[in-house]
Image (cartoon, rainbow, N blue to C red; front, side, top):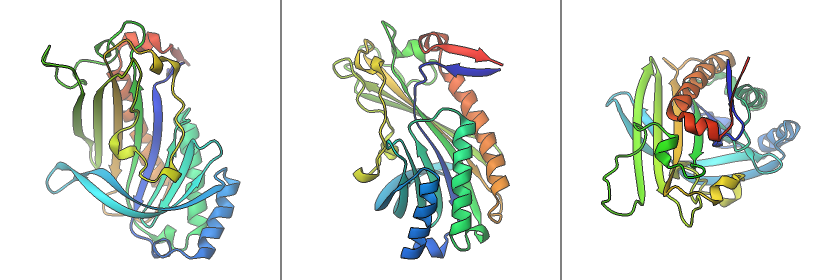
Length: 288
């Protein structure tokens, strides 16, 4: 049974693939940039952008069994699609596809797979490098409708703790990192924010806000975001990562198998977080 929402709260989706450093990308030649650009135009990503940015990431440290924040300084080559709602990012050790116009996992992964093949066929020695991890990340804006409050739309265990009438709410966080299977870590981050003049302001976690303005994506807001009666709304961030054991050689089938597993778990978490009231408000349907 397939579950869908007519007014889905999803605002951002990404697949992030990590691999061992590839020398031809680290010191990328103009000829390789041009060859990638030609192929990316054929795949619907015609705008080439060269950028350097510092990015914060959460990673699971196996030695300490803790989540650690890591600052990365990346020189990136990006290709953006028409409408500025999809972008692919290539660096010396990663390939990332970001979208703010996500429809289905199948469509999203098929596009990533095509881009992966382009890179394998164009970048020297990429197929000989070692796989490190693949991750799937979804961000939803939980904005209650009508007279509902945030607690009517998400299960109680997800929200940050409430301290009654202590004062005016400014910001709250809850974060859970779980080892769900061998080599798999699931991070669920929920941010509770105050509405401003009944409107939604922030829609992405801090570490997903693009540091380089010329590389950003357009997010089409929903009409309900501009008339939120609830004092607070939420940002639900689900990040599921698979660590490849023993750093195997680059293999497209292994990447696909791992990502499919990640999707199913991330989907189950989303449906377990939202309430029946949220489903009704967003037009919940089940189809064969």
